[in-house]
Each structure stands twice: as structure tokens, then as C-alpha cells.
Length: 193
Image (cartoon, rainbow, N blue to C red; front, side, top):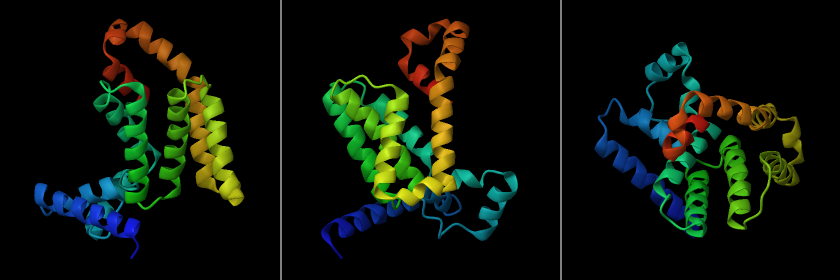
């Protein structure tokens, strides 16, 4: 083992022990799958129930999980100065990449958030399309074959669609719900939807 490997193993072991202590035996494998992506302890019957109900994708750690974690971190770090908020958020998101095994969807989503946060940190105004393009370029720089990966194509297509339709959707929500301006956490939640 190496130092980072030992540290990550210790963190994952600590998370597993905490989940097993806080949740009942029937629930802890599901919580562990949602938090770390570790599905080895999940009973076959439970996996099958998720598959039959069409919710199996919730057990796979994905960009959605990164987005939810990002939203939670934004809310929790609201009172920090911008610099420290960005540093804390990025440190936790990249630790999450390591803890969850660095699977491609988590890596892609975290890289997109990183580009966006670094732009804010450096006080550079960039459009969402520029952030998405830079993240895609960086990913393809390290693995050009990803361009032909269905996962890469679908996740970037989804993020690009969100970026393109986001202004219209948020205009609609602002029009429908006038009180959003005073509630940034509610506004953030609607952004995630």
C-alpha cells in the first residue's frame, strides 16, 4: 500500500463503519451503495427490486450524485469567503472522486464543476458552454477514445442541453415563483431539478 491508498482505504472503512453503526442491517448496504458506490454488500433481492422498479440507476454513483453533493456544499459553505468556499468545495468533490473509485461519470461531473469553480475563483466570467467545452477537452486530452464512449456522449449531451435550456427554465420559475430571489437555497434546489 502507498500513503494515499492507505488513507483512502481508511476513509472508506470509516464510512462503512459509520453507516453500519447508524443504519439498520437491512438499510446500511443501500446507504453504502449510495454514498461510496460499493454494492458488494447489497442483497440480490434488493438489487432486483431496484431494477424492477426502474430505480437501479440511483445506486450507481453518477453525475447526479455529484450535482447533489455540490448543491449541499454550496449551501453549507455559503458563509465562507468565495476563495475558501471554492477551495473547500473542490477539495471535498475531488475526495469524493477518490472515495467512489474515480468512475468516469463522477470524474466528468467533478471536472465540469472544477472548471466552473476555478473560473469563479479566478474571477473569470465564462459561459457554461465554455466550461463544458474545456472539461470535455481535458478529458479527451487524457483519453481520446472517450469521444466514442456512449457514457461520455450522453453525459455531455445532457449537460449541454441543460446549459442551453437553463435560462428559459429559470425565467419560467422566476415568473411563476416570485419569492425565489430571497431564498438562494430554494433557487439552487430548482436549478438541480
